[in-house]
Image 1 (cartoon, rainbow, N blue to C red):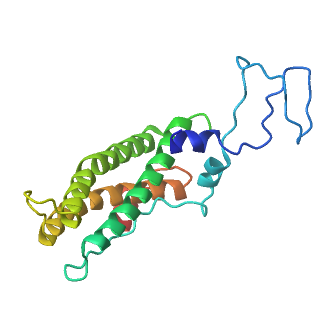
Image 2: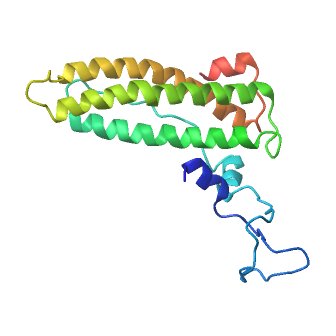
Image 3: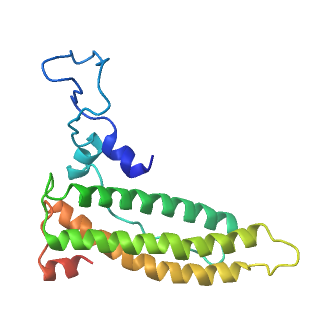
Length: 195
């Protein structure tokens, strides 16, 4: 099950799968639920937490790579941490898009911003980060007869990732500003002043 599916279907509050006319206590489990029966789903607790201003932030921290101190193992930690965070942000953004107009009700501009950010993040993770991981693996586990990736090569590739990451960071910052304004788009002058 994907992380997004797990977010949507996990930990619902007071969901009853009971047949009409039959009531169950809160702790009692229905034993004769028909698989074809319609079940009313409610937003997961994680989604409701996302709506709370203090519960979740779309901020993407800046990653500083020191040319002297950053070796292959440090790059591995950076890539793993950054990938996990971007995947969490994408899952939350996908969740918001899927619930638009059902629960959140934000405008087309916010939905477009979410979709663009999701697309750019997927592109970074599926293309550049994949390429970087392959080169990182060549650096950490050189194969005889194949060209070894040098640490300088990794730093050059990271510079390309960092440029894309800066664009994604700005997109997530815009999403964060919208979230803090109850999903209203800030005025253009206020938006650019904060970035």
